[in-house]
Figure 1 (spheres, rainbow, N blue to C red):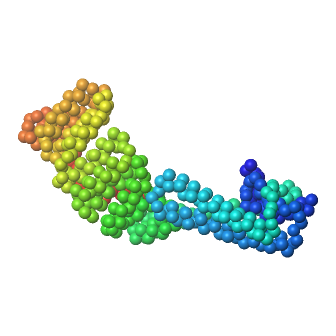
Figure 2: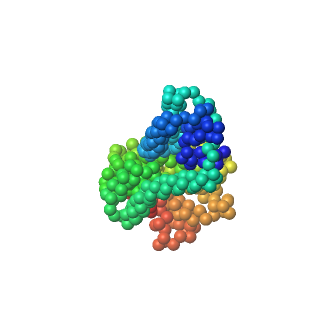
Figure 3: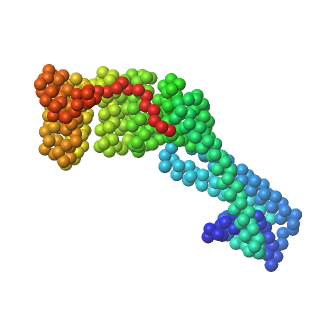
Amino acid sequence: MLKEIFENLSSPILYYVDKSGNSIFRNFCITGDTGFLYRTTIPKANAGKVLEYRFMLDRYLRIAYILIPLLLYFIFIHVKYSLIGLLFFEFLWLVLVNACRLYCSNLYSNFLLRNIGKYERVKFTPNVPQGKKDEFVAVYRSKIIVIGIVILLFFLPALIMRYTMSLNANAKRNFRQIVKMSDVYFALYPKSVKIYDMRAYAKAMERDYKGALADYKTVLDISGKHFGKHDYVRFANLLFMQKKVTTPTDAVDIFNEYVTKKNLSILETSQMLWIKSIFKIENNIPEGIVQEYDDLISSLDSKDTDNQFYISSDKAYILYLMGEYASALETYNILISYAQGNQKHYGKQLKSLYAERGFAKRRMGDTAGAAMDFAVSGISPAELPEYEPSYSDQEFVVEKF
């Protein structure tokens, strides 16, 4: 079947007269009854008139074959990317191309009926040697290869632009060039998460915070429900940019909106909660932090002791940063007691837990208790300050491109 279709498409023969003197014109069908038969020998003038009309239709059809995919391509690259969207555009391409072919077929059929008369549908089988058929196929295959090369050449600048932008981004230079080049890229090529990341970074460095924020939102929208390793940076920068554009409260609301669109594991959920909690503490909006940790912990399976332990450790750390030292101390007591009873799994965490509890005790005025915890932790006095719960003011996060 595929060989027949390929030979039909590759053959330039549109008309022949068989041994019985019947005139047969090739129609626009790819398989099945591919010919229109007249049981008479049609004068050359009349046959030539038909073929001229056929050549005209073929020209229009070739134009449609070029314009339809180009039009759909440029529409596709400017809409929100999704697998369903891609399949829809492929389906639409098939529908439009076949609709054009069907329209030309109808015009051709009517032309024959008006100028020559009624025909019979038959198989279009001109007496062509196999060598000649192979030659037609080879020429047609060459055209396909040329089209493939043209497509590759069209996408070659995209690779060059991506490489140039990566070099500039990693070298922290030519930010305006990154923005301009990315604009050209998006005008010609499909959406790329990496290009959006680089443009967001460049816009941030150029203090175009609204533009950077829009790009981060676009990236998070493009990826749909998938959560990848680069999303940690994107969400952190989303908070940072939204705060620059509006307020910290708005930033938290937007952060929550986009987080709920993702399918997150427990670990990813806890890490996103950590990022948001640090941001809220830094911007003096601690309301709801403890409740969110309690809700996350209560949502865990009773047998999921690892996540219960580590998320509770995060909660204790956050409580300390919030100045809730009594609550932090209570949580540390539970964690240390549990870790001591399960040293095979959590023994390594005791060192930092003792130190953190010691700082909580010291904040509450229990100097002796703090000193005992510091001693039990085994941490040298010189290294001890590194274990006090703390955070750095949020900055724009840059990663390698």
